[in-house]
Image (cartoon, rainbow, N blue to C red; front, side, top):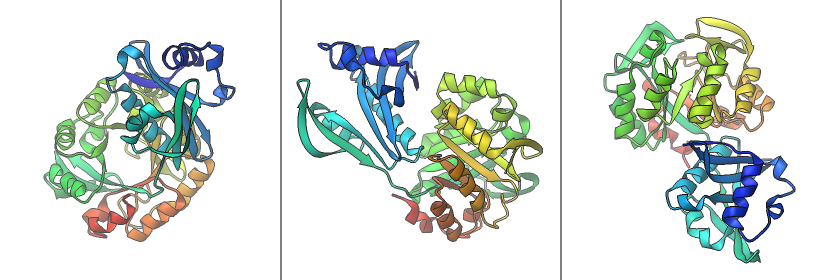
Length: 376
């Protein structure tokens, strides 16, 4: 099953068939439909559930949320609603709301929406407005880099400058989870060097024994690699070099697995994209690169200034400000150079949705307890 864009003609027909069977198809067409985004769950070519999303600045509304009658009660609505929540948050939403039928109150409440205002009647149904508001706090994403199954850190991507911090990555991941952190950036450095995923067993162990939301990268070159990563428990497959070297292949993966399954990595030298473990420079402008893939449907991007990584000399806050000014609503994750809580405060003030932190934690620049201020 995939979540992807749905043609309006199908959306209109499903609105009529499922929500208002006694009304005409013309009555299902809203004047502003052309301005919205129309998404659905598709399985083997069949559209099982649909929803329409409309944006006004950082406030989003969803309408006409419907699941085929024979597929109701199977969790499809919950899956699509959870996807919506993450999708709009990734685009800078401060609020998501809808006009909900009163008989669906419990369903929406389970995902954090609450009713507000008076109820009203329309087409024989009773409605109430419901909404959820999102925190603007930046999410801290700790990093674990793996070589030979061990937790290590490199300096500026140099394998010769390797330091082993723990021989048991699961132990480290559990410390992060116990501290209340929810995400994990897991990098297979052996895989990155070999050009094929190697440390998937480490991923499988951490995913199976923690509740962390894991993005996993390093060596993802084929659809088989993507399968291994997602089937081993990663929520997101991290892609970087492939996005530069083989755009058509990545777009094919996005159609197959869903664009929301990929975290785009933008490694930068002097505002130009660097690839292949930072050994290969390009003339591709970082803003143009990120904008292109955001337009293709990528929901999250992390950006690493190669000159800062592993040096504990502060992040490239001005670069992130420039990217966010050029691409409003981008879910941008800062990476590289964080050395203090003050650095994190600056990144949050700049508008970053998240920050990947590695060496600063391992070198004791601040405690995990100090990161509580960034949690909801």
